[in-house]
Length: 125
View (cartoon, rainbow, N blue to C red):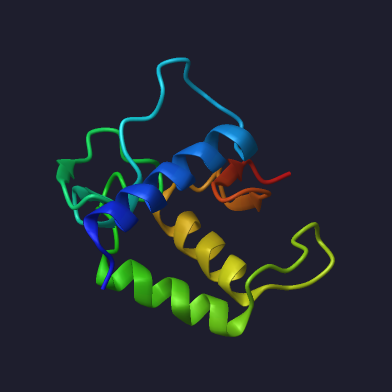
């Protein structure tokens, strides 16, 4: 088991490597090293729990590590992680998403174009 001193040294090493190898996005420093997250909470490497008020787009509506989201990600990764989506292949999950979007949008918006994680809606020609 890691001693407190060893844990502190490991945290300091991560912070040092972050400053050296990761592009810095704030001049104010980063307040802690993330160990894990669940729901709306994030835990630091030193064991403190924080309410996550700046959750990113992947977690802001259901929280971190949501079991249904995790299961869907695992199921997708077991099929394909990434496939060229620039019109070269038919991707069933993309077709299903487009179908579902068409069901909940006005008829004039019957086609989807997906080029990133966020689908784009376009009018049919």
